[in-house]
Length: 511
Image (cartoon, rainbow, N blue to C red; front, top):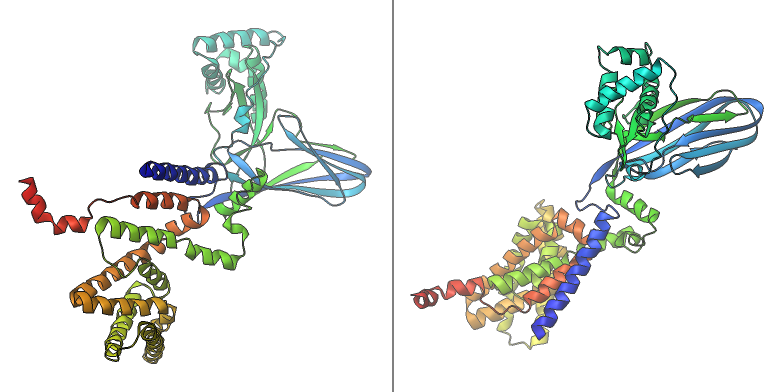
């Protein structure tokens, strides 16, 4: 019954810890690796026009939930202009208005984006109205009907139909029907509009989309028209020249449909100039921003909300349970002997400053010197508490002496000996001397070496960058460590060292 209780508790702790960590990773985008960065794109549109010394209003289409990207920040830069945005479900539009404007006007729209594969808002707009067959004039009508029949015979569904039409339309040696429909030196947008017109003859929903190719350092960029057809389930993007099914890498869908990109009232025609820049940004800061957008309080009540100085303290403290877990594994499953449970962990913490090799050297030196003094105190026949106080005083004096001598010798690592836990050192010396007297020097040295070995492993675990990141960013994972510790607490089987100890008896039993 007790085992069942422990198993249920361990399961609840594990599910809670892993569930919270999965939520942070999947929904907020918190990285599992430290110092992980992503590419952030800064896109700026400069809209300029000449005002006519009267009221002016300018409308400009802007991206709406671009597929494959998430919005990090958005700015509307204008002087003295009123600002309003609206969303019609397909495009977003910003409107600037001013009572009176004269001369050249410059308005700016700036957006910061980062790549997000989970963002597919554009594809989710799956509804489309089937167009009516246009009333084509002759001979255009005959050419389109014949072309549609040829394409229908060479295709199997809407997507293959659309691709075959694009390929025939862009053939270097087109047939007479395509030649009749194409205009010499036709622009890319003209070609897309012609394809939409022809597809309407087959009652296939199609529309033009405008994309901006994201290139670092781009100046004076322009939007490029692409074709989009509806296959019955979702909108599919097609290259109007090559019939490829996907956009080029780092392409931002800016506008859907053939409405004017910019419209001005009270001024001359507007010019739009696009600029693009790329930079790297920490995924953690992006996750914090996403949590704000999702109205999630996970990051607001995380360790990132406390002062930096306190954060640095917890970066160390949260590693202590991992060290304790390591001690439990080594003692319960392997059977290593150490002086106490927490002494190796505290020594591992001090090794973070001294580094491993110097930490082992300084620890061995102090314990050896302290042990000699302890044997001397034994001849004085002191009571326990005065003896411990004397050992503690001597340990501090030894630490100070080693620091001074090492400094004079130019060994700066010796100065970090002050970070050693003096009380633990005193208790280790006392414990080692008692074991020496009761069980002999071999047992005392064995436990001392075991303590150093466990402290060394603890140092390697507690200084691991990945584990430190996981413990600080996902402290709920310590619930999983707790669950595993509880389960190990119910283990009463053989240790590995005992199997080795009793190997002869086990072999005889097997025979």
